[in-house]
Image (cartoon, rainbow, N blue to C red; front, side, top):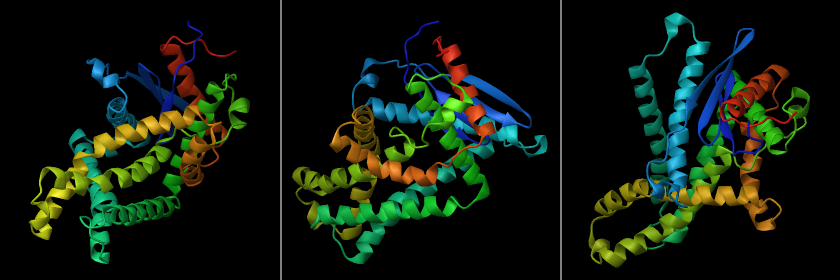
Length: 307
């Protein structure tokens, strides 16, 4: 097996952890007294442009969503009794509803609340989007804080912490033992929680430019009725999400590599603070699952494990 290191990431599952590498991923969950796992392949890049900066971020995000949903569905099947298994149609419906609620609460609600407060996007785009961004972040923080009190979510956050600890242990080139993994922090600068906060901040800058760009190409835009203007501006915001995700991904990658740089360390700090809510200290059994997942990944990726 090769001795080179690979980039790894992952997410918490129901009673488990999923760890992904460049080509494959492994989902491992605790099922009663044993650990069961499932492996899969990362979709290959058919076109070279998919690896370009600012494009690869959105492509990776889509990959992670697909792999994450598959892994989460599998972990739910392992945890649920046979008579309570979720069908594919039910799962698809649940995912669509979840996406719909995310758009309503984290995009539409802050946008229209900012309008109701009295700020005008077309006249003061920067101020409008700062207020819109602050409201969006506050809603997100309230949501995360509220669900953290739920027993099942708290356990999910513990597995999130176990995932980060195991990744830290591997990245620091330490043997993947429970004793070694325990020593590391549950916080990681390359976390999805940090990514979401960066997305929220980047969106403030991108959306601030939107009215000016539309006016540049459509000079009669300001003469349209307010609802017609909103009917143009809001859908364009949704269409810009892949672009914003691409920028945010590059910032996240650079800030992870440049943790000794004060500026990039500053960029990482809000995400790390938020992870104090979204990650919890795991117990020994939860760490075992994370270690199992990352060891199996290294095995199928043909990477030599640190002895």
